Length: 382
Image 1: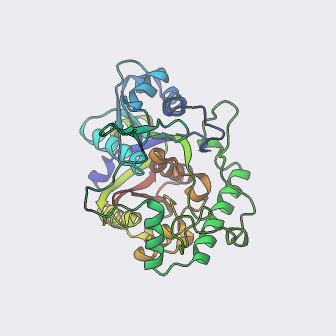
Image 2 (image 1 turned 90 degrees about the vertical axis):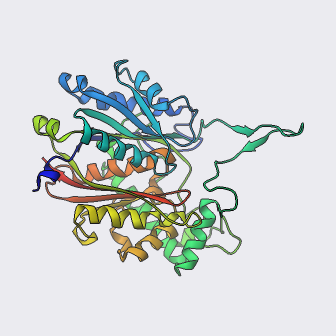
Image 3 (image 1 turned 180 degrees about the horizontal axis):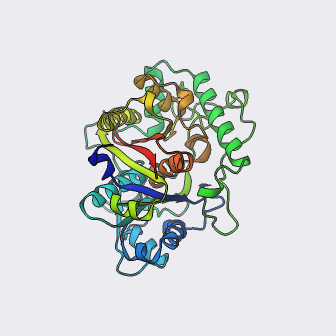
């Protein structure tokens, strides 16, 4: 092992809330309400000297109330007032971007950083554009992902076009979605998510995984975005609430603690055409793997954010990757996509599957509105 690898930061713990469907089990909880319990659990797991080394809390968030959700959640979690908080926004990549930022911080200065993401679609504030010429305010639906004059399709429409261009039909998308639900439900029933979930009151399981969601049942659904499209509500992710964080430490702290974890071998952020944002996974994955000196054949667990089945299948086609290798225990199509948290959920899922398996490699990658991708390559270590 080279000195550069030995000096890489390590993720030593990873937790998440249950993922709720917007308006359902977690609907009454704000973004800070979701993140604070996970921060509290991760903070309580640190030994006293570790708590003294806690440098920051970094949270991704897209649609929250502003006001630095990370700082509010850290205080709500009961962390010392000397621990600051930073909220970052790379849209759907925010949670993984926060972890990448924490890793970068720890390469420069030793210590411990809690990092991840949070989203409460249920309590996201409604905003309006200011009135013009005495007219009524117009509700602000979403931020523009591109400047004026650039194509800026909604994500579902872009996924439809991406699937069409890659020759990915309705049947293949429904088959992929059905498999994601089957895998997630089987994992849930076997207790495979239990160790990573921080219960919120009586809510201790994800809302969305559905048993028996067959290709035949999915085939009954009509197009959701384009009149002649193949993307439906069934082969798309949901709108969700949830939070996920990891505990990241520098290499020296990891050696002192001697805990199993995931060493961060490489990270990458890349841009693609803004009108095909779903392809952002492809260049980010390639760059992260190249920096780690690995190929996809070397990777044991691959976690892509499943925003749309057609989008994931298009990325797999571009990468020459068997789609059956992606999200082996179910992904966002089944678990849900709490935007600002989803990238961090991928990291939690890698931790659950790889920690304690020394030498195993993992890859997490997420596509981002506006044409970006974020990826991370890890290796299980002791």
